[in-house]
Image 1 (spheres, rainbow over the protein chains, first blue to last red):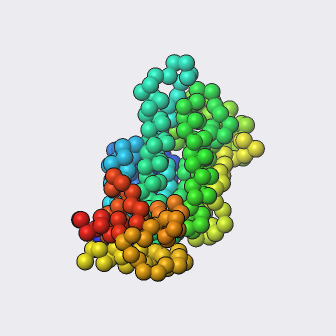
Image 2: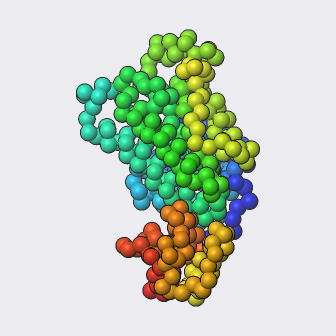
Image 3: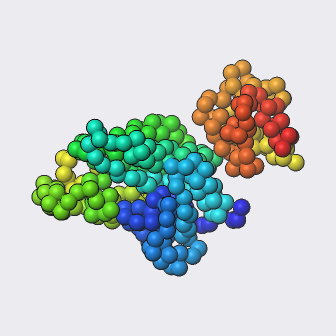
Amino acid sequence: MTAPIEARVALVTGGSRGLGAGIVEDLLAQGYAVATCSRSRTDQVEVWEKEFPDRFSFLSADVSVEADATRYVKDVVQRWGRIDVLVNNAGVAGEGMIALTDDGLIDRVVDLNIKGTLYVTRAASRTMLARRSGAIVNISSVVGLSGYRGLSVYSATKAALDGMTRSLARELGSRGITVNSVAPGYLRTEMSHGLDEDQLKQIERRTPLGRLGDAQDVARVVSFLVSPDNKFMTGQVLVVDGGLSS
Amino acid sequence: MTVDRARAVIVEFLQRANKEYGELTDDLSLYGGGLELDSLEAAELSALLEDELGSDPFSTSDVLPETVGEVLAFYDAA
């Protein structure tokens, strides 16, 4: 193992595009060393690799595969010596009426959103336990709290993450590790692809703050939760939806 | 020697966990009647051993160790 890097080390799963990329961008801007992974690299990944050669790394990995998830975490520990922050962002939003949903879609959504999150968290929590410090944020969703027609499988997995957040907060709190969920509302990212423009405009009208969210809106909240400034908040689900669910 | 390093990790862990212990004999139980580790403490010891030595008997063995000797034997056999 090389000497531990001085910067705080953050893992962000699924950070090559969309909301995950916004979180990576925000943490890099704050001086973190950030390791992200996704199944395929993007142009944005190559920009970061050139701009931050010493504190950005990318691994092509499918975290729903246990071996990939473990390799991703171990590579980071090998490279930078520790993990201070884990943001479980990787997810997929399968949609459709449950009566017509095939096994493959259920498996894909459950495997990535739940099993992938558990695999990465298990591996990362070990290194956090060894150091008795760390911060974990699970990116869930307002649909895990309020429900949404056609998103039963996705919302089931996001509600599961919130349950995991509460249990892990109790399990790891005595070791200085915080665990919280951030539940974004409707964002202008790839994950809102199931909604057409009329639906998005309707959501805007119903949102007290009068617009859809963007990745930076969520990244700022994540940034606080994982920062040393968060000394006493754990086990919570923070909704970031412009007031839509209030 | 790896076994000595493993023993040092156990001692370091017990000290930071504020666990009282005497001589770490091979037959000393990790749990009831011995070091009295709870499940989180066992997980923490497992993580520390892996962190320091690259592997640990709790997450890589077929049978979970029950005694100090069984932990050390994992490294002795490696």
